[in-house]
Length: 224
Figure 1 (cartoon, rainbow, N blue to C red):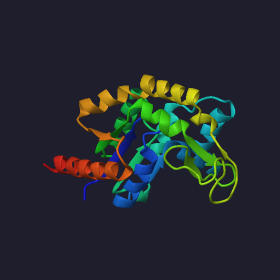
Figure 2: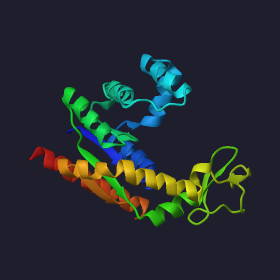
Figure 3: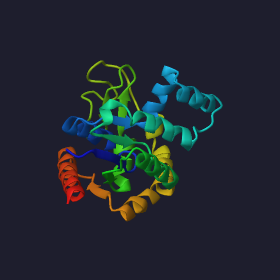
């Protein structure tokens, strides 16, 4: 089977995390969420992690070149031989170009950039309606997954809260950041012919089916 090297794109609340877990199950691919990877490297005390920590301790952003070094290091581990799922990187066209250069050095390339398309009003409803219990982090939604008792977790009885980053004004800011910095990647990958658009406003199962069909077509196109 050909490699499945994937990048996930889309606004916050588009369901990328849910579908990434399903892709891992369906294709046995490692899921590389760059925020998690960065925290792991810092915790492990690797050379790159220590360099990153020096920036984080000062409250500075970790430079692109350091992040890409971590990613390329991760992509040389044995579990990525059949492919990978990248989420959270690249976020800008400069990062995308750096990723392409480094992958070329490894003799690899992206199979597809999967774009999760969902109307902004749906994103607002999904994120601003989320609630999480303070004890164990169980998730609910005021519209789609209501608890049996208002403001109380069904499983442990603890109080339900709205996370700060799910407040409406914060969600609006996150969407503005996405539009200004990440949306240019859509044109970048479209020009390369590897952008695959997914209707993420549909049910989770329908989205999964569309992704599977889309990837099957992408692999077929690579082989002809």
